[in-house]
Length: 463
Ligand code: ARG
Figure 1 (cartoon, rainbow, N blue to C red):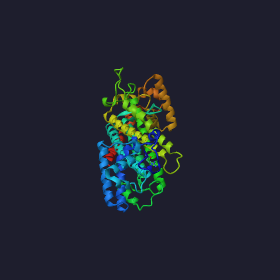
Figure 2: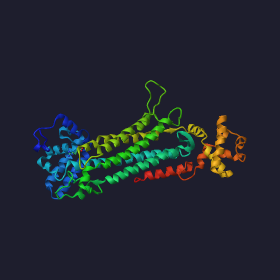
Figure 3: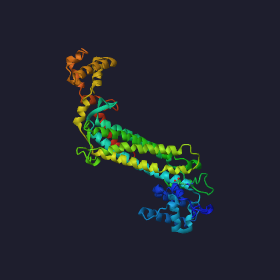
Figure 4: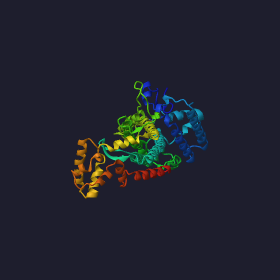
């Protein structure tokens, strides 16, 4: 049987393989709500512009509402022979309202229809991810507030560098997530133009009102160029870029959690809710959720690369290649959403082992910079010389197998005779973090202020 939507010049139907490769209903059924919303706005505009009768518009709108109900109730039968969501809905509309249904597609094409549906879907998705990211930021800022003075080792090159506070470390992720949210918000701003009415690619000869449909669908304005409207998927590429960067951020935190929960680090404990046991090793508590957050970043990055590759070199305007824009995006967004939720759960339930972190913070001569700074401040040594003196003192401690504060004053004076007893006041990890009061530094005072500031901003629903 030839296709009832365009069967005019076709004598036979497609080969089974053609039908399989061509159909998108298996995944674009997810656009059902957006598709119906767009069709309702379109038919209302057609009626207001005198292109279809008010009576037909009422019948079409009621039919679309009925179909939305059927889809929601799960009683709608999706057909692969009808290719995609657009034709599935339209074909059912013909059954429900009769020949008037055929007027809905006036001044419209599936090209602007799919561009519209996808924009609406991405816009909804960005709003949902933004809520989730805000929730994760809140979990982190709350934990940061309660751990503002908890000392842990700060690392560079994965070597103990300088003591920091656990709260400060967590707030680093709050900042990263804020930029992720900013990237999503930027993408949302740029995508918020309505392609409906671009039709196949050239616009239409009907006197449509694109400003009306744009505003009805919550867009800032209609897109300005009909060819661009149906050709580009930069709103997908941009949103997936934001998603990929966010997933990379989460993967770094996930990796830290994986390290922190090892018996060797023992910095934090995860709750039973976000860990698993081993079927053979009874002692195990595995951080699977964190490992999966780390691993799923691969899918998100993959979706971005896939999308860029589909679009690369594609001539204007629409080509069927662009049907490949959806599955990777759905998968990536689902994965990201799950990762953000899992992270929020892990952070909320995570209990830091403060004594363990503090002990680790003091190892590896992490207060050597404090010693050097003291030599500069109190003895007036140039920093380079202070660095050298400190290096020699660290070597003495390392040779003796002890910490800096375990050396005697005499041992230090052997390197720099003017050192006084007062030096011991800067060698402890708590003194070290307390002294880092520069703007953005790790002092508990700064961390408390920043965590509090974040919590206020996050509670205000616009931030
Ligand atoms: N299912 C198609 C897609 O996802 C809809 C657009 C089809 N347009 C066309 N001219 N065949 O891209």
